[in-house]
Image 1 (tube, rainbow, N blue to C red):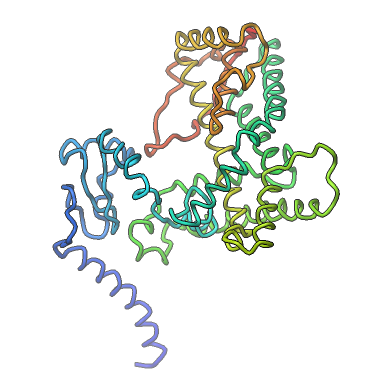
Image 2 (spheres, one colour; image 1 turned 180 degrees about the vertical axis):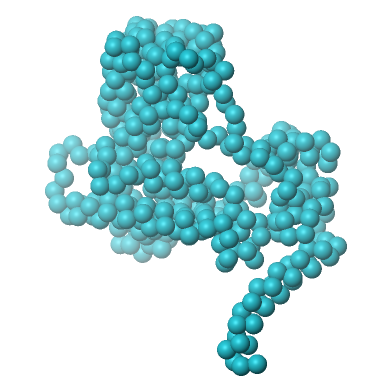
Length: 410
């Protein structure tokens, strides 16, 4: 056999042997010094992935009825402990929080979080604790959140006025788009100091990343298939990472240039300003943060903030409003409760709500939409059309936008 033919033969033989090795190992009786809870045995290679179905949380609930409130199962090559008891979950999430603090590493997190340098995908340890401390003290302090309250109020007023104009004209309002645009502007202003940038589609890029990051990737459960990227998900997430890189690098560079000039009086630093300042100070002092807050760290933190602002907040508000419109009695009750607090005021102020830094935007926007308007569904729609069908057991944006006919209350 010629060297060329031998090379071709080995090229095809190596993956086959690799696959057979994994198959043989999976067929051998599983022995472990660990005492694992009971659970389904699983199949070769895929383990119990076939048992999860379209709604994994419901499938797991059915399995828990058979194997108990705490069970073990193989998801591909990954040994997984599933807890279905509130009491046990409380022990894990509170009493033993540090033991279970790290999230499992996956392909999407590795790429979108710049090597797991953000908060969402970071591994618990010295780095993660410092990042969290930085965000708590510098970005999410009560003083810093309060400094953006005027901006949030301005965006909220514009949102309310848009709905009022539509209500007077008897027009249908796309709540999904309206809330999404308002949230995007608030997020832009807090992070980058401006409401938008026509050069980039930040929201579209972030939503694409979230969609791919939440997709089922077989490589996360059968690592030996990772290099093959048989679903093409790793390639897609890398391409999206490049797009996000271009956006964030542009914004960061512009902030670095602006920092070398004199700021106007009364200028309020945005999140990028603060992160760059912390990075500069750590380099000057040569302390622990020297290797902690580099450019990739800044971008990873910003990706977390964008995801939380643009995707999570919008989805939460959209689904809350859909549920309220679907249940008029609860909507009326909530309207009265809000009126008892704010009276006849046009705008629900942040001070009217109990401050919760993580949900301040969501709480205020929902309260304002409930306080200012009554809602009817457009002709041809009924409450049953506001279905809350789940997908993969996740809280996702509604497949169809939430359309309403508002009428002004206040």
